[in-house]
Length: 577
Image (tube, rainbow, N blue to C red; front, side, top):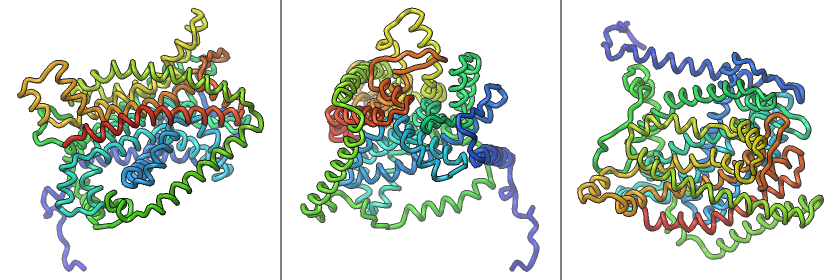
């Protein structure tokens, strides 16, 4: 016990809070108040079925924006947890990789409406009579639009750690746990952050579908910008649609400044290079936090605890090297493992066929295959166009941190731009000028998919070592030679990750883009997306299952035969070393 009183002022000026502490604590407390305010609305009793508590009054938009943003960050936190565990297991375990990576292909190709159709009842029964069940269903739906590209990015980064850095970690006798936290995770952080930003924007793209929970013939619309936009489209209120777009823009600017830009600036320290870059980005929020006194002191124990936790010499099975795993694994275990996976797959196929064949025929299967080929043609052409345009633009932006800093919120907003906002233009234009929906609705797909390529190419160019750029500059390498021999090999692993997730996103976006409505007017293109959307609207579960199954098989074949060989080539030949 203290024997004498120590005057607080005698501790010196460094022990006193400064003006930056006041500002930072005000921001943090304000954020907590907003979270609590929005959280209260998530535990109220469930409204009566088919009642729409959504009003198009502009005054409610800030609250709706707050509810939607809270859902999206809850889904992002779940996606980050999923990414770190799922991608790590897939990258570290040979046998798990054989199952988890193809499963990831399936999961990213299953449309968000497909997840909602089969998970809503579970979440509503989990919290009967409370809106929390519907909130969990909406958060899960948003999670399914955010998690897959983050997992692919982290998996790709773990598989492409430079061999010389890996040898250094081995030389220091780091355990698998220590190497994961001190080498592999820092190496993966830049690409992961850009994919988190892309995930947030992807969540906005599907927020209309996620906030309208349908169970049988009843629909529950959760308070949020997505529901507001859906009601505005149903009532043909152009002014309300524009107000929702402005609200989305404001929210994106706010969380870009307060959350993502500080993280991007902080992540610059994890670039693999020997010389410092001439240009660096900055963040006023990060500078504010660095100037605080009390807040930084309060974070010191947490930082020490994290350092202690990541420095433990844990010997978890998943962190053993593959060489050790292969030596200790008998062929008999491999056979048992393959038999188990095969039995589960056969059982799942049997159950699916049994469920679908009760009401559908072989003719329905043939129809879905033809429609899937229509959608595949759209996806391939749009990916080709997006690659030709956005790879040079993404490289130009990524090599200039100052430009990236300015473009970052704009890119997030454009990526978040819901295709639903374009529905009025698409429907009115197609009906007025008698245009072909098979051609003109195709362009709606690109609204939600090209950004996976953009964000990953920018991340790859941002992470490209400055010393290699200086070497190319000293040898006066320029023009097409610079593109072919310097930058394209450097960003290729990132591009493949972006194109792979864009491919899955394109199939998913087809659900929204191939069947659009404006009031009572409807326009549909030929494609598996239109088929699934119309089946969902009609509540025809066998058709939903058949459409999702055929689409998933097609995506898996496409990824296995085209993207995976490119991924393997990038891993073998184009790793930084």
